Picture 1: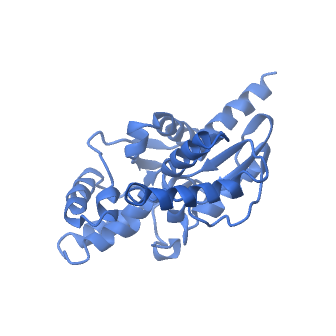
Picture 2: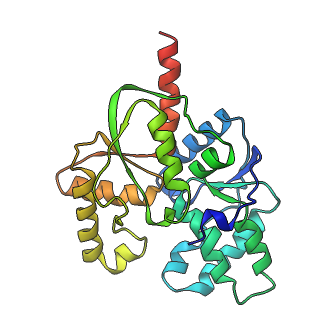
Length: 263
C-alpha cells in the first residue's frame, strides 16, 4: 500500500478531475451524484472525462496483469494533466496509487506516467480533510443518529480512515460508535468473494457481529463494494441495517443543515 507520506506533494487545487468508479456507474449512481454535490459545495470545479471506465483492479487482483495493464493504459490516456484526481473509493484510489506502479514496474516507458498519476490521486475524504484543510463539516442530521464506520482494507496505511472519522464526528446530531476489531476485513475482496465464497461469507458475518454489537442506525464506509457485501449479508441473515457511503451522508447532512436553518 502506498502511504500518504510517500506522495507528500499531491496537488490540492480546487479544479479537479473525478473518477466515479465502476460501482458508481453500475450500482451506486447516487454516490457519484453525492460526490459531485459535496465537491461543488466546497467550491471545486469538476472535470469528468466521459471516456473513463475501470481502474483495472479486478483483473489485477485476479492475477491477469496483462488485462489490467490494458485497462490502466486507458486510465493514463484518459486522466491527463496536473489537476488532483479525486476518487470516492479507497480501493480504486489504492489501485491507481499503488497497483498501477506494480503493474508497470517492468515497463520503464510507461512507469513515469503511472507515477505522475499516482502522485496526484486522492481518495475523496482524504482530499477534503488533508487537501483542502476542512476539519469540520457543516452538516446536521434531522434526528440524533449513531453510526459505525467501516475502515476498508485499502485505506490502511493512508490518512483516509482518520479523515473520515474527523468529518463524521463533526456532523451535528451524529454519534460515531466504537466497536471491536475495527481493522478486520469485511471479507468481500472483490474477486476473492467469488473464488472463496464460504471464507468470504464467514469473514463478513464475523465483521457484522462486531459492527452491529452497539445497535447502530447505519453502517458507513468509504467503499461501495464493502457496503454492498455487508448489506447483502445482513439482509440475508435476517438482520438488515442501513448502509451509506460517506459521500451520501455528507451530502444529506448539508441538506439537513439547510432545512434546519429555514425553520
